[in-house]
Image (cartoon, rainbow, N blue to C red; front, side, top):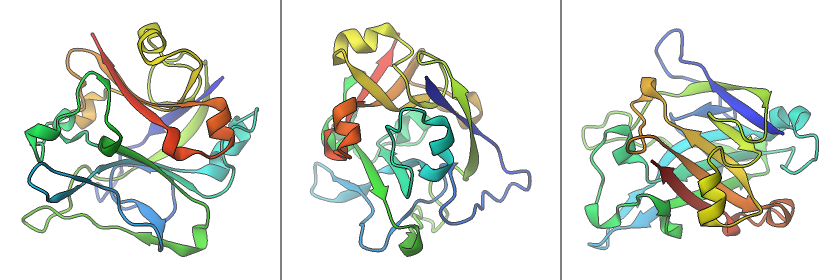
Length: 214
């Protein structure tokens, strides 16, 4: 089985969500001792990775029958998806496309202590909030090979297992979303992949990121 992630556009349009809540986009909440993840560009500058979503683990627990995920804390995902949201990439030389992504193009962070969270506000050159407004997430059970946004289960496309390797679970499957302007070329998905034993060991450094598109 898998867990479907259902985003909900803000009814007031503000994109404001409570600190530590599950949501796509907006700004991430990380423990005070955890730095916002960046990647180094070709010119030596550092570029913040795009915040994709954060999941409050206690909300996932009732749907995680096998107990694979942490059931406390906050699980946060970052990736260089700017260009797939229609934004200008910071550096064309750092382009991440179809296939496996380099480790500096994505990050998974687990913040176990919800009492020590700080919100990281990322602004563009004009001082405006960078990226899309936050959208709260609710959760529902899903089939292991389901399409859409989900955690756990297997990649929806069999080709991912054939090309990235068998035995990998979806830590996060990010599907295209017209409302966000999110497209992975003609028709694709982005997968954060991990082996079960590494997930149980909380070995987040062993997560792999893979884009598949037709």
